Image (cartoon, rainbow, N blue to C red; front, side, top):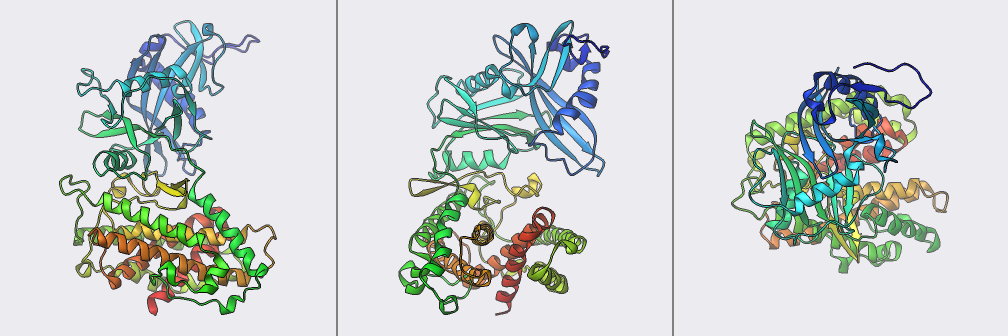
Length: 549
């Protein structure tokens, strides 16, 4: 390989003696690809998750070739090693488009290159329609008998009638994965960062559609997996039904909350006279005090109840299989308790270090709450260690794992749940551990708390009520939303015999999971939005206060 001298003529930066079809059998190409070409490209991508670490080197750990009538595509499974002694895997499909083919259909070019005298562009193949067309046809053409010798497994659900390719386009901006809309009917998520195991999003989506027939999630359509020689299976992409929707529930909730807080001034509501309730008290909508209805309206509680119902139905579906061991409900045991405590104490210590290193960013109430957090670190640590599995009578199931308002779509007065990949900070193995379903419930409660505080923080001066009164009214509203959610959720899961325990165990698990979630949030806010640190800190203070009552 040689680099060309400077010239006014546009020529490739890298030249290789091999043909494009033989690129990944050529040591010179692989060396340059991993040490020069890819490093420059990947660091700029939104889906690259290693920006906060120091890249050490890149290896190509596996590769494969896929041919259409017009193009040869290579799939590269790469391992990125970091100086901090860990690694991440990514999958990148590649295309080489010669200059002779004319104008490119994309501006996203990895590099200009030459293979055996043929000059052109090395491109992420997802940006080439011919590639998108090809993988769509492969999924729709699925048969039980896979291509002999192929490590790539294409699958189409039996619930789907095969269709012909009509169109494909990118869905929104680039995120941690890349999503393509096909035929304005399906959406295929190409996983950028991949794991040497089936992706939980693929596993749960397929299970909910094909086995438990849960309707309030995008239906599973098909997938692409890679079978490794050691028996591991890697999920490369997931295709689902495209849901027409009005946006996510986070945006919806913010729109609902703004007029609620405007009512305080408009209706001259005395915040000090609003009737309060204990955290977790089940609250039938029919018995909400008229003062609360006057302040918040009825719709927000009706929607909270509907979301609780869909959450309960999701958990009932995930806990309904008695044959598939990956989804069979299980009891608590010592192994789970040890795993849980080790995981949470590690996270807690990490957050302690983050707070101690970022105290200078805080002031006012946030600073005082942070000091209280440090003063009570022994109490919080003991709370995490106080998980006595022998007292747990409920069951653990596969759960969503990263459940919040942003993971819910709103359409036609209903809610649809999606994105079952799990908590980004967790390992792929940890994401598949069966957990109390109340962990998802706690995640949604924390999301309610965030929506309330976000509305107060971002009110652009439109609220004429003091921030202190807004916070007090927000905390009361939060308790009623939780109460309404609990009334619907607990009634539904217990009616369907999903064992979440009785009142004392439910409240212990909610306290435990809410504290875990709020401590988890603390690290993000301190690093990204110090002003918002008050939200998880207030949540932590409230949970600790509730625990003592």
